[in-house]
Length: 206
Image (cartoon, rainbow, N blue to C red; front, side, top):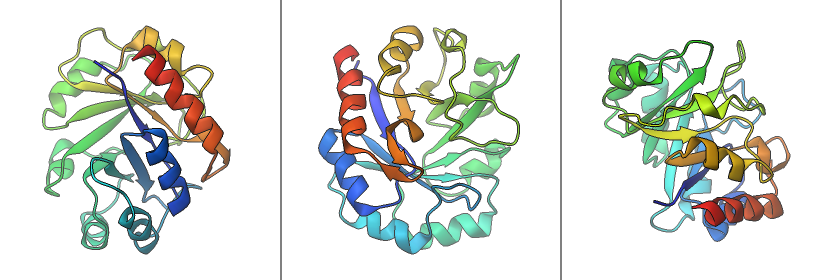
């Protein structure tokens, strides 16, 4: 089974187009004001408007209120939600969208137990643990900690780049990989050459 690719932190329409042309399966839009890659709903809607069929749009939230998420959904056509905070399963389930739950891989994290807790999630996204940082860390974690078998699809994130993604896939064998800073020229501005190389490396391994 081939490894899927999500490119997160898209802030410009032209960057979304670059991702699609390179073969990305999904793009991520960050609705978290503290992130340097945050977008407003109007901006996100404009980015999404030009996307072709079969490219999944994912909205990232961090401990956002029900009202704010519903406001975004009223303005932006998101296919899937990604929760990066301390949201419980009931919160994640209430928006009538498939969702991904991000798990920060702190010492002792039991991935399978969390897979059971978030039984309604479509996937778990495993990211590097850094206190007070919710994604976009730019740092990897020990990929050998990704369980060989899990009841949920695993999306690998955290410090992935064109130079290390093939090794990451060889070790962790995830369903998908998620990259943001590793394919940028500056925060929120993507680099077409890095995106092409990243996806080439993923496709080379499958």
